[in-house]
Image (cartoon, rainbow, N blue to C red; front, side, top):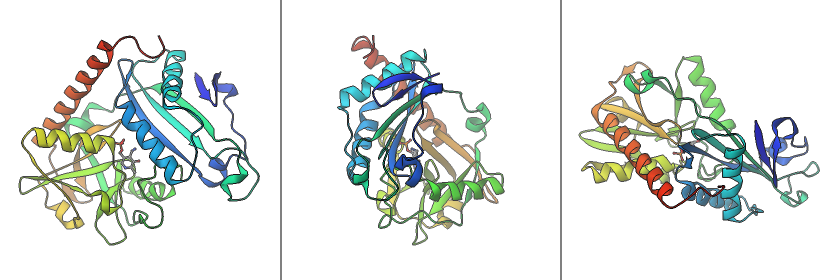
Length: 294
Ligand code: PMP
């Protein structure tokens, strides 16, 4: 396996970061996860845009131009001969002495990891996955805005531990005022009274790239969509529930704690539309000419 570290591709055995890296010491950094279909990074521009937004929200200067970031991703995919893959791009504050001051770090650390994408089991899409509502709350946007896709993931990890304790695949967190927020790595949607509902960005969530596309596809397919503040009880009364993220796409939910759901028609429809969108995107990018690295 090869990894892109700072300015070059290196074998995994040489892909080392210092114990003084502030990403390691303080979780001071940002990241993006992307999915690659047939050699094309899906919605690359949107991911890079969000990366720059996260960077700006933590006062981090990305030491590369957008075009160079794209090249680094495609070069890493090429070095690993990957066409169906995921990409994890991480930028930490970098190497520096102990201390919180970001100015202690002269140069951010830039890493691109790519690996083969292994599909989720079919049963996850056919029957759905189990969720739990975690007792830990999503950190408030006034404390650490979930819109910053940061390396500081303990909030989500605490919820994930709760999910594991009850054998659930994903945990949904409420925000500090008790409204639905999001999963540890996903956004949540549910159908209620024929309306597709999802917590609004103001609830303190990451504005998922998949979430935005799914809302768009739902509207285009004649569904009414409501982004708002929802009590967890509303979720229990839903006719169907699904979660979204870059790797899972649209994944139906079979239960939330003791309440059961069917993998319903709307999740199936939106998953189908999502995959059609992916196919169209891949075709379009390929028609534009050879990949950046060819
Ligand atoms: N919320 C959180 C907390 C996440 O970590 C993710 C995964 N990046 C998402 C939502 C979904 O975002 P996306 O659709 O951009 O993958």
